[in-house]
Image (cartoon, rainbow, N blue to C red; front, side, top):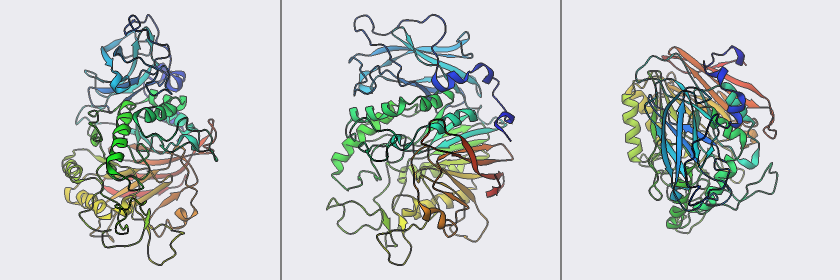
Length: 532
C-alpha cells in the first residue's frame, strides 16, 4: 500500500506541508503581551519552535521556550517572568479558537512554558500557537486521545530513538511527518552529551561536553534548532522517555560510566534532568534536584495503552564487575561474562517502586493492545568482545541482558496478569531488531509477545557480528547498517510493524524505503515476518 492509499485526517487538506516542516506565522492581529515595555525583549523569541505531547481524552501538553539567543545559557532572555498567551483552534488560521489562556515563562525554568490545554474534545486534531511581546510562534498541530474506553478504528504510531547530531542529518523526521502519525514515540537519546567530535562528524556539537544547566541548555538548543526536528514536533503530539545520553553515557542510577563521585554526578544529573524538562512537552511534575518521575501510561481509547518506563534513574549497578571497581573509581566493564550476581533477582532495572507500578498497570489495563515503551533490546543477546576471547557467552552489561531477572519479571507478569496482546518497543542499540518473546518458565512454548527495536535516527553501529549472531540470539530480523525508524499500525483485529530505512542519513534529502514488515494478530502473540 502506498502512502497515498492510507487513510488521512480530515484536517490534512487544511494543514499545509509548509506548516508541518517549518511552522508559519499566525494570521491576523497579534495580541501584544509580555515584558516588552519595562524590560524590552529581543526578537526571535520562538527560535526553538513549539511542541505538544502526552495527549489524553480532553487535554494535551503544549510546550515552547523563549530563547532569542538559543545558544546562550540563558537563551538571551532577561531575568524576568514573561507572560505568554496560548491559543488552541480548530483551524489553521485560528478563526475558531476553542481554548486560550496565559502562562508565565519563568527565568528559573529557562523561560520554558508547559501548558495543559484542557477542555478539548476527544479524538480530535487541533492547531495551537503562543504569543509573547507582540510576536507569534510557529503553528503546531496536535490531537487528543480518544475517550476512555471508546472503540477506536486504528492507531498509527511512529517510534524512534538515538539522534546524535554529529552522526547525520534528520531526513528521517521529514518522512515521519509524511506518515501522518497520530503519535510519535521517542525512546531515548534525544541529545548526545559528549564533547564535540572532530573526526567523521557531519556537523559538530556547538559547545563542550555539558556538566551544568547552562551547558545542557545549549546542547538541547543545538538539536532543537534543526528545522526537520522542529517540523516533526509541529506535526503531531509526542510521548518521550529518556535513556543515558540525556545525562551521561551508560550511567546507572547515581553512578556514571567511570564510577566517579556519586555526589558530583548527581549534581550533573540534576542539571540534565532540568534541561530535559525545560525542552520537552511532558505531562510530569518538574524535577526536584536529581529526581524526576517520568514513568507513566498513555491510553488510546479501548485500543491501546502505552506503559512508558524509565530504565536509567532507578537501576542498580552493572553486573559482573571486579571487586572494588566502584570504590577505586574505575570505568565499569561494558561486556560481561556469566557471574554470580548476573541473575540475582534482587538486581533491578526499573527500581522497586516502578516495578510495582508496572505490575499494577499490566494487571488492570483494559486495552486490546499493551505497548511497553522501553529503551533497549530485551532479548538475551550474546555479543562479541574482541578484548576477551575466552569461551562462554558474553553480554552487554548495559541493556536487559545485564539485568535478566528484572526482564523476566516483566515477561512473567504478562503471563500471570493475562495482559492483552503485549508488545515491547525499544531503541538504544543503533540497529533494527525483532524477536518473539517467550515465557521464561516455558521457553519451548508459543510466544507470549513480540519486541521491536526501531533503528536510530542518525546514530550508527556498523557491526557485522550483530547480524551474524542474530539466529543464535533468537532475532527474527537484525540490521545494523541502516538508519531510520519504526511504524506501528494497529486496530482491534491486528496490525503491522514496518521498519523504514534511510538511503543515506548523511543527506537531508535522503529517501526512505521499507526494509522489513511484520504482521500482528490480536489473540495470537508473536511476530509474523512479511516480505517487503
